[in-house]
Image (cartoon, each protein chain N blue to C red):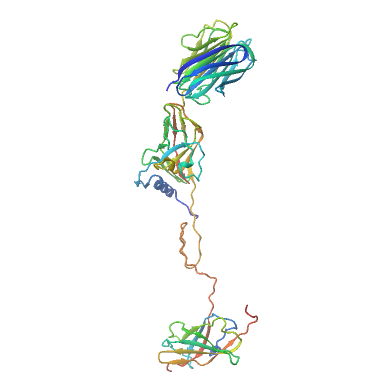
Length: 269
Length: 154
Length: 117
């Protein structure tokens, strides 16, 4: 069963520390939400991201150090076979002037707390293009999220899922993917028209097989001899002793008889 | 010298009790079952009614998977004179999730239990339990395999 | 030859004792053991206490083996030997058409240092 993109949602936010993003889950199995939040500065941080009241698992947070122009937060939540409308709720530590949230829904993804195959690869800079490589499983899916001060679409070879810009001066969130056909896979993004970007790349994996070799169920056995009776007429039989014993009890001592002769004439002389 | 049971004897006892054979002559062919539970079994447990089974569905049937393979599914017999034990091992038991996760709901499996084949699932006798070391669940399309489940007499 | 100390004397009985087997070898005056195996009827040991007017006590006598060796056995019951002193003892044997009795022997009963509980 391969990983499939289902739908994406995104929103831009202005002058707030709080935002909601509505999204409707389609029916499916092994559903995963991948969420990326682009901020302008690391000083105003993400403090809570929930879906249906459950906190997402944060997988990365980082930014471009040049002038605090791009900062990204990435997290996921496995939803198994959930469906229906829901709301992503994001809270920051304090108000930010312009920021963006992107959400991608996938099916066929491992429901483990860490659904990624590899460690994340990141890059940042002021150049308008970047090139990253990350190894993938043959049935995995390379995904990326980028926070940019402003930018354009990714180049062919990447599939864009989210492209959300804020009001001017522009802050942008990009979410992309490339089909995993073996290692390495290069995520290319050129043509970003402005400076300052920060991008994160990793590889989602399909549900993983589990193979367990449990410890053996062990029984410690022993055999023992039943009560041993010592005596002249005893037989010892092992632990299932139906003991056949005629032990001679020595407690009653044999008492010597009194002996005496008496005169009696019976037989012929 | 203290009394004991030979390693050969341990093997034969297992053979008779678990394989329904004595020195490879078949007596009976009743199968065993391996089921997944979320409770912690102990030596005092008797039947499957004492267990809490994982949710059924998506490829896991209530009452567990039937042990298949050579004879009654015990594919490896060991008499170990170095470590002094007799042991029987089951052929691998595997479930593949289809249409959703296993378990279909609730917590993952923490133990596997070896059961006899009583027609009523809750009346199946619990013969042994195997620690899976953490709550185990698999996503749609993935496989959960239990390898080398073993009964050992030392 | 029979021991002189034991001819006609049954030694070892103490006042208050009972249950100890007493084996009597029946001999003639020449010391020859008597074959008493044919005396299969009532066989009795009779003892008379020393005090005048006291009732006799009896005990059933058996062959120790088959009687051919002249050895018979009996024992006193609890309460029989109730005083010390010189008792008299006699064995009576019965057959279908005969009765024989031993000479009267002595049975000196040893006194007890302490009264039995």
